[in-house]
Amino acid sequence: MTTQVKPKNPAARITSQQQARDEAIRLAQAFKLEASHRDRDRTLPHSQLEALFASGLGAITVPAAFGGAEISTAVLAEIIAILSEADAAIGQVPQNHFYALEVLRINGSEAQKRRLYQEVLDGVHLGNALAEFSASAAHQRSTAVLPNGEHHLLHGRKFYATGALFADRIPTAARDEKGVEQLVFVPRDTDGVSVIDDWSGFGQRTTGSGSVLFEEVAVDEDDIVPFQRAFERPTTVGPFAQIMHAAIDQGIARAAFNDMLHFITTRARPWPDSGLERASDDPLILDRTGQLAAKLQAGDALLQEAGQAVDDAQQHSTAETVAAASIQVAVARAWTTEAALEAGNLLFELSGTRASLREHNLDRHWRNARTHTLHDPVRWKFPIIGNYILNGVLPPRRGTL
Image 1 (tube, rainbow, N blue to C red):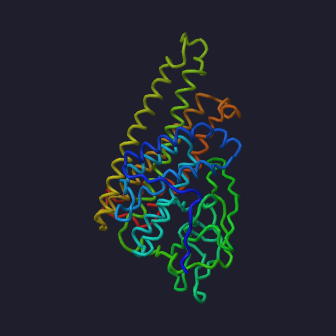
Image 2: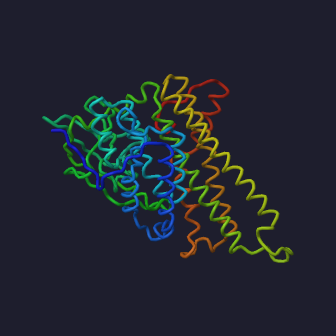
Image 3: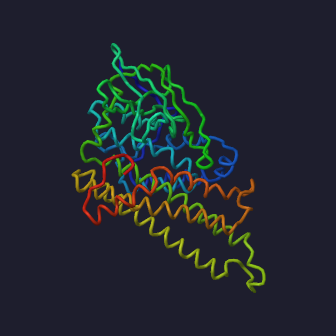
């Protein structure tokens, strides 16, 4: 019998892009209030994430044919950036949720789409269990899902499972009896599933990115969606995943920039003997502030352009359109990575050692940027961008591009 998962709270229904934006802004205003304290004390955002998925934002990418708002990728990136500016950890958690929904859209059967999309419309939160310590490379996995009578058995261990701690289902990458990778939409409360809160990163401290242990977990065949096939043909799974990571970095950059402006205008002092009454009149600070403001505005534009490229590739997926989307997203991701790091560095530079005092906790933006930008780092992207521009070589199809 097919397992039906019910959400912690029933979700409202969002029907338009503007409503989605408005809801994200409303939630972000609330999330921002205690974001510093949650990071400082490592208080996990259980209630905040419950509110996010109860709002209906978790279903905004569900296709209109299945009752969803089907918002554009550019607007999704905008919403992820809004949430990440308020609290970078909360902004990162739904990335895997939307990623799993994109895999479902591309590879799921009609029956799977109807059932799982309806769960998400009702408010179900999808986590993830993809990465493994045991593999020699990021894309290699040893977790297996094998036939066992009327069910399949899932066995393995995952780490960096962002969102699994909060989720109702945990989409899990596993290899079948033929070695082909599948995505198993495992109900969180199934016997044999253990989610372990052992994430100890010095940034993104409250993403719940710990380990997940699967010990002979019985799963229904209906919960197994093809995964590997998404990379055997041109699809948007890779660039769709990556534009959300770019948006997270953009949100972190904006948070650091805004806290920097507040520090300069309320607490910063001019250099001794400078003759200036205010730090905000310092020509060097004016220059650095202006440069960073321009970079942030450019980041917004790059996300919009990349989002349009992903939408185009979703509507007409060819080797060329998917490659163009991957490159545009890689450009945006590289840019927002550098903007987030620069914003965190400049805030630290201007606020000095006081930034890390418990009552200020301004260093969290630098820690968040330094941690999250290592997720599919830009050193992988620049050579691929250059090879595409100079030699016309299409980028590889994978989740990191």
